[in-house]
Amino acid sequence: MKINIIFYSFLFFLFSCKVEKDSNCNVLLRKAKENLNSFYNKNDADYLIASKIYLDSINCNSFKYKIFNTKTTILFLLKDYKEGIQYVSSLDSTAFDKNYIKSMYLNRFKALESESRSDTIHRNQYYNEGLSAIRLYMNEHPSDKETLCEYYLFKMLFTDRTEVLREVELLKKQEMYENEFLEVLIETINKDRKSVV
Image 1 (cartoon, helix red, strand yellow):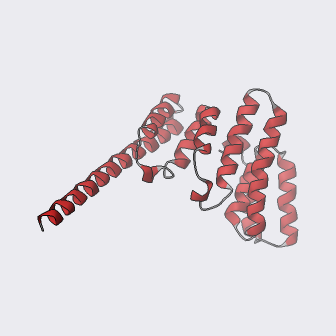
Image 2: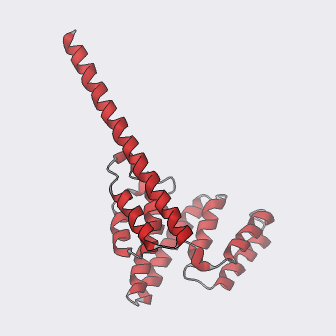
Image 3: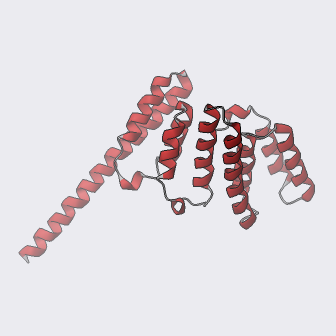
């Protein structure tokens, strides 16, 4: 009986430590997001650096994928493409709800890193690889509107806007999607392409 009490006390202690650790990681993630918002409001890169420091301090396995969107956004904004490549490469593609997500982000970081070296050949190759991964998923899930949006927003990163708009107009004629949805997509495409992160 005494052994059981010790065992359960030990389990309770471990659980308490995990809850405390997760709580600390929640605080760090919240601070990272607050600093990212401050960057958008004040356009001061110091907030990006602070946000990254908070994220890099998170040491909870359960947060590995919770920080993904915030971390990739920060790395894109800091133009730290090499770290972006390392970070995304370290993740398991099966952990994402859609199997193209890892490829899309990894190829975007690789394309931007190539572009930073004025290597347009590899840049285009990486963008096309990312687009192919999205297209494969779309072929299997043709009614997934979110993926359709990501496909065209990704394509906007390296393709002329008029060509992308022409493709969406063609979709209208095929009547695969509601006109209202496609009009919203066209409106989004017509916005400044630099706002697409």
